[in-house]
Amino acid sequence: MSSSRIGLRFFQNSRAAFRNATGPFRRPGAQGFRFQSSDAASAEQQSTFQRLWNSPIGVKTVHFWAPVMKWALVIAGISDLGRPAEKLSLTQNGALTATGIIWTRWCMIITPKNYLLAAVNFFLGCVGVVQVTRIFNYRRSLKDSPVETVKELETEVVDQAKAVASEAEAAVKKSN
Image (cartoon, rainbow, N blue to C red; front, side, top):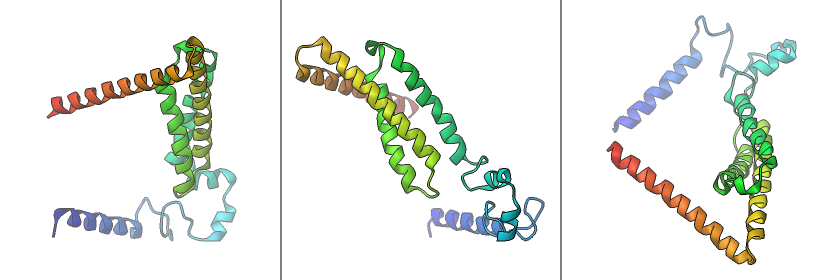
């Protein structure tokens, strides 16, 4: 038997013991997870604030605070709409676009569905698309041929990716 299986069983057993435990941190009669109420009658008696507080996606969880903090990225992207396109970073805005698109989809797959996080990621993707379009249009206006602009953007992104990869390799070699 491998040590990972022993560790996994230990973890599963300790979680089961924690769920069934009674003590100062458990409500009398509480069963299951900490966010589930023991009966429907007590859920109806809770105020709106108590339901928000005890919700599986409520104020006590990362499901609430991650979207709240991520709005700062959306606000920063919106504030960059006033900056000239030549001062914007294509890689940064491309990364924000990809992040917004990928995580918007992922928020609809995970359980519980996190609509707050999906909304902020959707707007992050929208802001990123607008900024990347501005950068592309600016660079295209500098050149006569849009094909040359696309090739220039491609080489710039590839060069930056290679630089990041070499920095990562150097950091790994240094840590070993």
